[in-house]
Image (cartoon, rainbow, N blue to C red; front, top):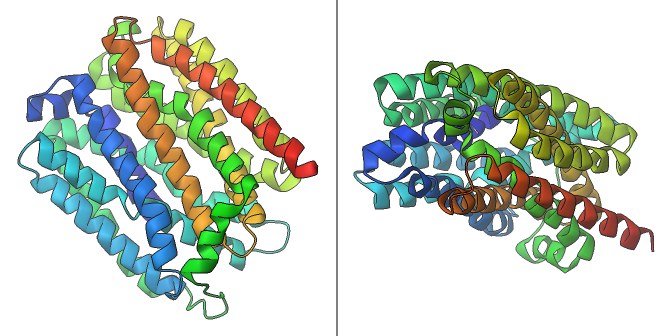
Length: 371
């Protein structure tokens, strides 16, 4: 439920960029910076909260993070102008990474031996389901009732999540808490930084494409605007499938599975640049991009938990900071190439290059770990 709310607020802005731009009086590439603001909030909040809250019991921490998330989205609804909206999105992003990091550790702790990645994938499934149900529904509501209504829906989901965690998450008294010093020790490990770089660089292309997917589908592929929520749902189904596949791959092949997913992502992003000129091929390749992108998540999350030793909370949280750094960079580079006149298919080609770079970093991480 928490992942569902976070995934909805993270991705719905991409489907509502034209409405946000019109409502705040800025251009669409400029409106895309609200996505960057949220992502930067994740990047800042993940390590800061994970370190400072290292001694807090995990169930209490999950509740506190989701309360903060609800407040951030409530502020978004009330933002009077573009500058205030940027600040509100930054605040809403602060608890994102720490929440997923702690939730992933809890799931892995409760899972049977040999099924940790599958359990982590179950936590991340909230993000995937958000793209099937939450994002299309919120986009539809936002188009009909105004973009602010979409974030009001997210705030309500967060409130329900607080109640659900309080009622159903076990006390978790057997999870060992650490300290800020221990958690910060993750930053001294080269494998942690290399794994984070795989996500931050390699996944940037996915966000470069998805940030501007609404206009790409309507202006390039010729898809009617009313069908954009359906397209987002198709992409979300790909994320669900990729998340399931990624979890099982990471349990069976912890190294080869994520590496194969990154290579597939590079090929599919390059293919999307050509496929985007037809609505049918655009939707098929967009679905496959979702599968490959989501398949990376469980494997990278589990790898970080393994290479971080006793600093798992910070490392697991930083994984989502890295993904959102990719989000921020992807949204920015996508806007740059579009504003430069290269068109709405250019972000896919840039994204393919980034995915190839991510695969290269992954190979370096594996080789140095073996040495």
